[in-house]
Length: 283
Ligand code: PAF
Image (cartoon, rainbow, N blue to C red):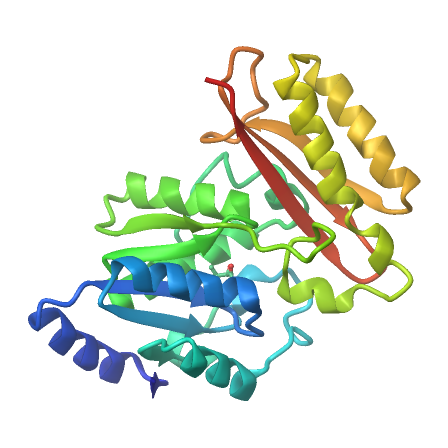
């Protein structure tokens, strides 16, 4: 695996690959790689000749009181995992390479409406940071396909919308959610869960599945279902950030005749904010 820290040298190398007719797949990450990230790399390998992974802990998408400083940085282990997965290129820029004019004055990419709800409501500016850095990374790598994990469902929906709105020549692909045996979605932030909380944190996933089954069974009283699910999570000892039944594409509250529905939830443990979702197709 070749490692690049600078945009110019990565571009030169990828230009050669493109001239040789290679299709380029891309997996952007913030590092601290776990099995779910490696599955994204494997997915990209299935449909591309070359796979580029990026590791960049993007300060622009963290709020003032969030965990940018203490976000786990595990570069050597990440490199080994990517080598084991036969990833071709790793792009690992520093802040100066990505934001040479500083973050405060960085030109931003804004995807309105969809980013004000759900995670965007409790993390103001977060998605603006994501869409901006992903646009920059797309411009640097110029991939044919980019693979994003389904766990961050809102992120995936926002990036799809951004790529559509801005006519970006890249195929956006979703990688399945990878789960621990009890259903907990794999996440770099799971390391913040305490031993005492660990047996109960899969309540989020259980409630999402319960709501999905109720909807499949014909229930349309979405607001009541949301309230019942919130109560289940609170009874397990966690504070709910949101729990919503949404239209899968727009993320608006689902209408009773919607056929593509995603149930999304976020809850707080003592030191982590966990998100998860379940999609269902009623057609
Ligand atoms: O999902 C992530 O890890 C990040 O939000 C991303 C897409 C790499 C942008 O920084």
